[in-house]
Image (cartoon, rainbow, N blue to C red; front, top):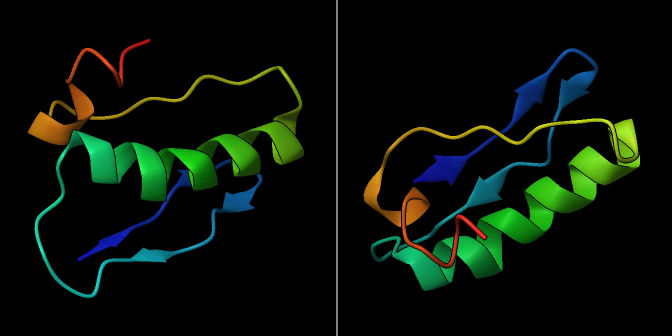
Length: 64
């Protein structure tokens, strides 16, 4: 499984999950850190992170 972010200024680093399922804890640790770093480096503080309604994305810890 992979995760990738796409925006008007390019493509984020690819996150590859070799095995296992993706729960909220793994999503926070392995995806959000990459997404937040890429977004901040690319757009500074002028951006919005959007995601779909997959179960790992809607956990209350993710929404904070």
